[in-house]
Length: 215
Image (cartoon, rainbow, N blue to C red; front, side):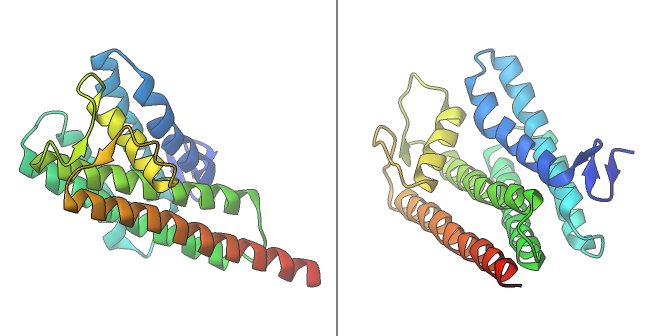
C-alpha cells in the first residue's frame, strides 16, 4: 500500500512531507534542462500534495476531496496553459496548503511532548507558508507580468520561489522587488505570516518542554 496510517511509501508522513517540500523548494530550481525541470516540478508538487493527504484525519472527507482536486489540477497544468484556469488551480492549491498548515499547527498543539515528528511538522508548516506565497505571487504574475521585477535572464518560476522565501524569512536582498501595490501587500502578508507562525510555534514548543520538565 502506498498510504498507511502514519506512513507514505513506508516512510513516516512527517518525514515524507518535509522531504517532498524540500525537494520542491531547494532541488528543482537548480535544474537547467527545461523538460526535466517541468517534469520534476510536477512530480515534486504532486508528492507534496500526496504527503498532505496522508496527514489529514480520516474524518475530514471534504479536505481529502480538496487535496485530490488539487492533485488533479496540478496534473492538468501540464496540458493546459490558460491563465484563468491556472489562477483557479493556484488558488485551490493555496487554500489546500493553508488548511494543511492549520492541521499541522493543530497536530503540534495536541502533542504532549516535543518529538522529532513535532519538529518536522513545525518546519513543514513554515515552508508551506512559503509555497503559499509562491502561489499567490504566481497568480499576480499571471495577470500582471510587471507586478514583481524579476530579471529577464533568470528562470521565472525559480526566481519566484526565491523571492517568496526571502520575503517569508524577511531577508529581502533587494534584487527582486514588488512593483505593484497588490504585490507589496502580498509581500507584507507573507512576511508577517511567517513571523506570526514562528512566534506561535516556538511558544507551543517551549511551553511543552517546560511542562515536561516540571512533571
